[in-house]
Length: 117
Length: 329
Image (cartoon, rainbow over all chains, first blue to last red; front, side, top):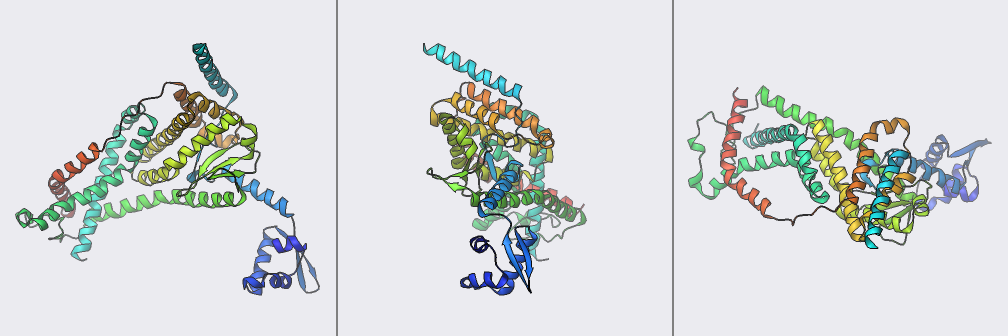
């Protein structure tokens, strides 16, 4: 993805050449690009016998989408088994309920400042 | 089947029966027990509830070990070897004279049924844990570390904060929370999360969930809910001590609840009772004078160990008698 974001587009061979230092085969690059296309992260067009791949989203757009997906997962309780939230992420706090609690706190603060004077 | 594997299997069945007995006792005494525990200071309550969640598992292991103690005594002092006094058909839970009886249909059903039940109940929790680890790993990769050690910032408008991770937990604060909360209340949130980290609450909850697999489903749910509330209250209390102000922590809880995300109606319908009640409980507990925390003593633990050593022969005989009934019904 980073190579395609930097270049704008590329075919399997150009991506493979760019990633040669990682010692991965042409087939691996080909199947990875196909998977990214299947996941709607890349678009492709056929030029002669080769597919030219290009990113559907810019890098910042992609990061924003991933972040929104992950935060959505967390707020829907997808990570509940491995976290302790300050206030339960699925807590329903209706207005009347919150106002009662705020009133209790205000009364306590008032009593405290009354006691201090 | 070799004598050694036969001994291990019979000890396993003994452990399973011990776990079932403790689980049954706790299920029967649950309402009164939870009422009594509610009067304890939160940190102590959390410790007791964790112990209760693990009690059936612990009882099973302790009973299996206690059954072996007399034969250990006998190997140290041969005069204490009592196996020869048993009738021939009596099942021996002994390292020196391992049991010869093979598993009958009843004992086989108990062993396989118990193990299958525990496995079936463990699968959903394991799936949830694996999913949570995957989500947290993704969240970690898209969050940034900030100046404060162990704290990560999530670039999201939603207002939330939590401690995530089993062995090396991190604190996650959203940008929405940092921007919308007053600094004084944000300090309370951070102090609360730091308490979770140093108390290792996420890990504690996991161990408790593991132990709760041997409880009846209703008892497991009640104990785990009470433990979750006790952990939150203990962290509230620690944050209040760190800041020197209990009301400040109560204000932070209500502020986060007010600004926090609203669940979809379908989700809220299932959780509103507990969470709304928990919110009120935490705030009112902070507004009340703090309960006194008694000094921790090692004497009960030492007493339990001495009792185990002394009572081991009686436990050993009682377990052998019950297992003999299973072996020769």
